Image 1 (tube, one colour):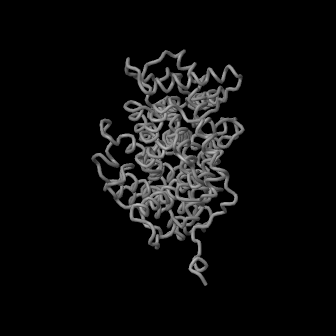
Image 2 (tube, one colour; image 1 turned 120 degrees about the horizontal axis):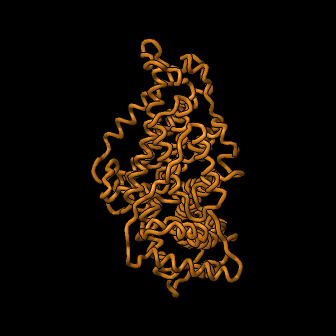
Image 3 (tube, one colour; image 1 turned 30 degrees about the vertical axis):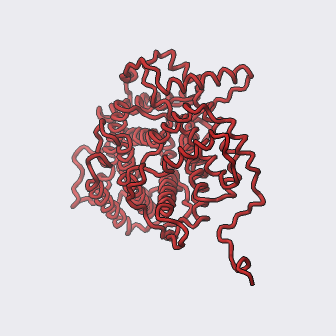
Length: 542
């Protein structure tokens, strides 16, 4: 038998199903001018790649250069990275507004929200990328994993528990197909490629786990099926900082433990409720001890607004605080705190109530701290209209504060928190926000005012700095406006919302009941955790 007959092709793909590489040449017609592409790529790495690894910037810029070269010849294995180029450009349009520092009158802001040229251009890039998806699936390389991670990131503000969750699932399936969930045992990859594979896999696993827990979805793979090496601190990898990358993974691991413990309350006998509540308190102590051990300068816990990683560290803190919110929110309505005309009963007399009180107090305090962190972001670098982390944390904080107000009675601290939270969340309503999204947000604010009798206050105005020079963002806006005028002439203008509030629109996922007077329905859908319900009678009698 010949040597060729003895060899087994390990990397087999159904190449007979692949499209012609000429499709990629046609796709290049949708590329923006070089300077615009450079701006959008810079926006992606500056504002979108936060505490997770997607790709190395140097590698990506080399691929972009190939796209603009007339001498480039494409083959079937190029489908994934070509697709990645267009998705990165699309994500860049979502966060491009972060570079706009010019003060604008209210009329111009309203006009910009209606025109939404940035989102229209983003759709062009997204649709160009989507045409390549079938061939990205066929290639099924580690670059295919990158593609679906990027597509999920682009979809997060639009449909977190739907489209983004599906894209994360595809990324994980591509990773499993490449054996990235297993420790690499071959001899054909150098150490850098192995580290790249490990970072991509753990980013996929961690972010999918985060979204799955928060939206009550099953994960694609059990932790017991994974033995891939954890990422290592390699100085040659520029972004993100390894300390932040590692910390984010640890936070989501803790979140998974908490989710599993909370799920036990649904089915465990009454005699074990005390044990699980103690487990939550132990987890709470472990998380705090671990967090306090993280670096406090430059990385992780450093919230100095002038620091190089201020936004990355602020996002890490938002995730940390959301863990306490997630841990305690289920217990807010267990005890009627309005009836507490005296201090909380001591642990010796009512240990169950004391434990619940600790978790609820942490939950409410963390919700208020989330608003403090978001306010710091707003004051120093601005809030991102397309940031799932920022919008999701703000919404969760508002819902917790509202629930605590209903259960324990209004207080000035909670009223101030609600007003501040609504002011912050308004800043994140942008892009192509439709009238229904704006009216829905106003309905929430109106319901809050009616229930808590909070007087109307003026919207919080944010200081804006003057900037006379023509910025890269201004050039980008001019280009997108020119494209919009061209499309208007042909009567084919595609406008779509990339606001994080889009999934709150009645009839879509999220809040399906527009009757906001039902505060239970208002609170629960945001924290969809399967069919998770606590037996309040059993818990209150701990």
